[in-house]
Image 1 (cartoon, rainbow, N blue to C red):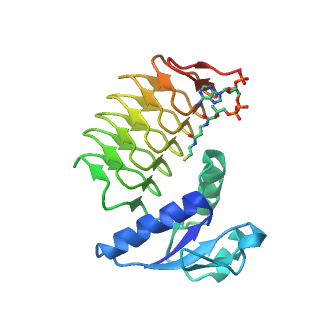
Image 2: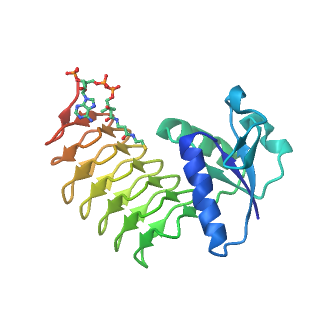
Amino acid sequence: MKIVVMGASGHGQVVADILFQMWTKGREMEIVGFLDDDPALRGSRVLGLPVLGSFADLPATPHDCLALGIGDNETRARVYAQLRQARKRFVTAIHPSAVLAPDVVVGDAAVLAAGSVANPGAHIGENAILNTCSSIDHHCVLGAHAHVAPGAHLAGGVVVGEGALVGVGACAVPGARIGAWSTIGAGAAVTADVPDHATMGGVPARPLA
Ligand SMILES: CC(C)(COP(=O)(O)OP(=O)(O)OC[C@H]1O[C@@H](n2cnc3c(N)ncnc32)[C@H](O)[C@@H]1OP(=O)(O)O)[C@@H](O)C(=O)NCCC(=O)NCCS
């Protein structure tokens, strides 16, 4: 199975490394290389893999499926929608050190990084990211394109809306609802429901002007 990683910046490299770790554990795949729209990366090598061109070069790049290495939620959602429309297939990248309860549902194209934990009943939406050493406890729901950043922890039953970012080291109390496309700042503690499109920070989390 030939995989192309869309995006060669920091998150793209994390995704490529997850795929590499899956390969070392026996998952059959060939990581063909990256595509990235940054002209400065064109023709270079990243993690020993070639940057083969820009996103527009995908049709000319041999591949069976794609991994999305785009950190920004809105951009990742847009690219995912375009590629879905083009009937592309996606790999779900799950680092071998991620710990998932047997009933956890993982959506198409989701990324679960090293040391991430998803407890029973959790649901991870399509194209969502559970990043390094983050955890979502029992019956949490991550909407499509959401991102739980490194070291963030969600207590049981937290619902994260579509496209929301829970920043690095943030946390949320049991049952909190975090609105769609909202941003929870680094280190924040969410103790009450958060509206859609809000930006929150602090302990307890309050709207940031
Ligand atoms: C919350 C956040 C989005 C705000 O970013 P921003 O809109 O660029 O805001 P600014 O940096 O201009 O800061 C605006 C104000 O909010 C404060 N602020 C910024 N981040 C904050 C945070 N995490 N908690 C509390 N206050 C914060 C700033 O001190 C500043 O206050 P001031 O006006 O009194 O000086 C950003 O700081 C953040 O925490 N992002 C999370 C990033 C992340 O974890 N990404 C995951 C990568 S894998």
